[in-house]
Image (cartoon, rainbow, N blue to C red; front, side, top):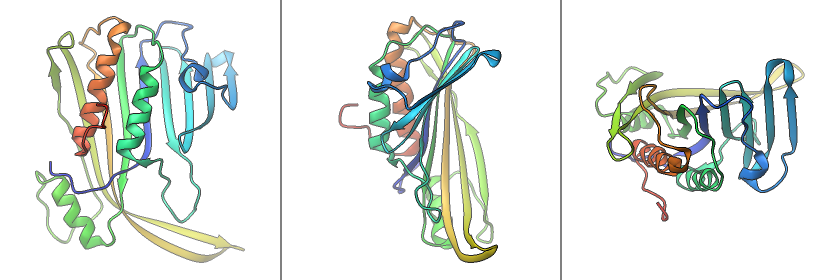
Length: 236
């Protein structure tokens, strides 16, 4: 894949699967400050810690067998798509935070990313989509394309770990309408190419001890940057 797009980040997530009962990840340990709010629902064994972080909203959701650490962009303009910033910078910040805490031993690890780029017109959107996904052959009269591919990769140096690498490509038209007194006052069309990454360790992979998870985290972020076609960060 030849990368020509300047991706903006809508959301980034790290997930621990098969986590021991009662084990949580502390928002304070990750950020260095207390969360803005904490919601506990004992009947559902659910805990939600959240607060502002890195131009977005960081939410840690803990429920039986799973913890999600998710950073999402906050909508600030109803006529614009929310963004955390460029993927290189945001991924470096998120990776550094994950490496700063001690994680529990779990069965599987996963990472998700939602990236966007905004071509100026439908024609430019089609051209860019062809450049990003050259394997896909389609006519000039099509739009609203979606493609999902899983490319499995083995990492012999990380205990033979097998990683599922799902990529979901979408070429879309987003329409935003502002209303006042039940009347449409403004309409804005936004051409959008979206790349969603879902990286996860295979259920058949036996993960090393949690002390070695930094190696897996580094592999996740390296693969995410590679699939998005961006360069490694300066410290990577």
